[in-house]
Length: 269
Image (cartoon, rainbow, N blue to C red; front, side, top):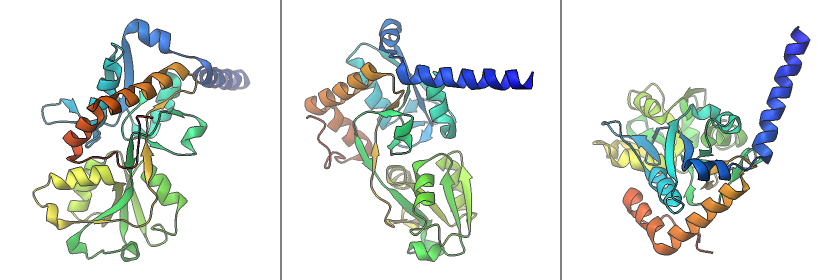
């Protein structure tokens, strides 16, 4: 019985993976006029909930603008960020669109759109802690988000920060991490620059934070989808090009960042 159960589970997982890698779901999406985007709804300014509960953000606006071109409604579904690839493979969601970093490890299981935004991992501290470099984190506690590209960077480039840190704490969301940073339970937070810039800008004590660039490479934000969704990928890439050409993408950048984030990109080609 145990053997049969194991064989069944293995076969089931294989079938799910095979469908994800070979099935083009665009006809289904086009027929239903709906696509489901998975996100962490606390990731400012990419996708987050206001006090009223309304979901807003850069990626919210961008996803809606792309699919408006095709007459398709976008439904946003909150997910456990550490399980995002599993949710995608199982068909619970159609896309991961929430400040999702393109990297070699993820490209083994996920297909990516063109890059639409640049990001970088930075170290955020409170000035009163006196931490002015990565080396000053020696013996200190660092906060990280579970399943994030920041966590991957921390592990994959230990010479930049990990070699100094005594302890780490993993968080489901950066909101909780910032609360612990503010209360001194952690002394540093490795975080996406887009999140840190927006969060700190909107704090009453913005001057009390220090942002440190410590050498992690720039990252590419892109939309993640199943490898079988060849048509969906083409539609998203084309949509990004259209929005870049007609000025919509620049307007979204100005709205959320107050400046252009397209200096290193040319989506019009």
